[in-house]
Length: 308
Length: 237
Ligand SMILES: Nc1ncnc2c1ncn2[C@@H]1O[C@H](COP(=O)(O)OP(=O)(O)OP(=O)(O)O)[C@@H](O)[C@H]1O
Ligand SMILES: [Mg+2]
Image (cartoon, rainbow over the protein chains, first blue to last red):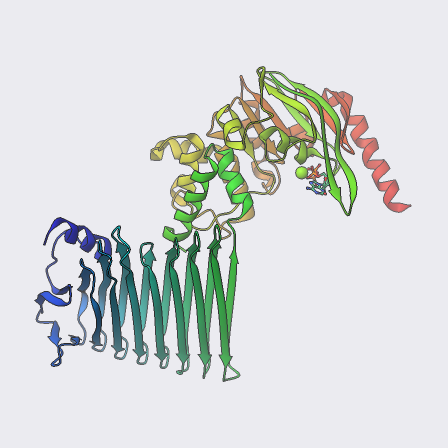
């Protein structure tokens, strides 16, 4: 891999080199590296549309890296990656897509990731999206995540997209059985004329299931974001959606919450707060000697990168 | 020397002018501690906000060692050596105590230094530096961190707006000691507390936006007490 590709790989997956263990690296529409292990098997789909990843039951502390790199314009792909996580397994999956497009043709990656979590399994899923490259070619990333959680399983998903992506439609669908737990943290930054649409649909089917969705976003310049969420509680369950947005310049954020309690023991909460950076936060940092601009940057940095 | 000359602050409310500070002139000398006191809503916080540049006076001038502050932004005043601890500490989302102390002191601090600043306000650094300065901290913890941020600036002019608010009685002695140990600078403390008023070189009594009297605590004390009586009587009428 060349320099640009390595830098992009690091940005989307935090990797400095090609990792050991289960890996699938896709570059400009084709797999450039694929390694299975005795515990985690990566199998290409017969029609070439993606991969199936099988994690054996009880596998613990292992990771799977599946970064996607696009370094040219004119790519438009749909990739299906399916994950089958065995009972009691506990693993980390690091996905992410980086587009470095310095051409005037757009490149688009539609990544459809489906997770099947068997009983009592746990997954930590990190997904990061990066767009870069000077020219007018669009950097378009449309991730769809489908999550099917069996009894007692837990999914912790952290998804981050900090700038550079021209347009994105991010869909997350989840269905949770008894005592399953889902935690999603989304961090988004849009600038210029970028658009980001987020759509969550969470079905809490099982007794004692719970979902916690936190979206933190910053919209700058003329960018627009739309946050939609539907939380359906069909049992004794707990669901919490929090959409917290900072607006700058002429940007716009629309939040459309829907909570549907179809069982009298469902407890569902939606919180949304969108607004400018709080004046008192700016003032406080300025009293410490930071300029208005430095203060603004510090607040946004903390908001997006800090712990919740 | 910090000098306020003929400072007035007038706001418009429902189409009417409301005078919040009325022609206030004050001189603060180096090495002295001033405590501003007076009834709620009398204009104390507004007065110190004008010094920091958080609000802009309608008329009048402020100078620090002969340099006019009138056209300076908050951060420029901060860099000239003014520090300010808020009456109500500001909370953030995601910024850590360590980050704020680093910005406040203008450098990356090692653990020992952070420990020094936080222990001044009775906090153990290990428990706090990596915590976010958000509403998961208690009111008193936030207030102590607010004070630590102001103290670590080693400023020429230290402004504390009601530093005692939310601090437990047990720690009160320590708090007054902090102020006693701030030497060679100008300390301006807004307070209602007798123990803090007593450490002042000069107490400034503000009433309805005007300086009613300045002097030693002993001279001001009778006025404060009679003020309170007036207030009580007023409430009964
Ligand atoms: N921008 C403003 N618009 C309208 N009224 C204001 C404004 N700023 C301050 N005031 C009013 O000015 C008065 C003085 O406020 P200030 O906060 O300075 O009081 P204070 O003396 O600090 O009171 P406390 O002891 O309660 O802290 C109050 O009546 C307040 O409501
Ligand atoms: Mg006040």
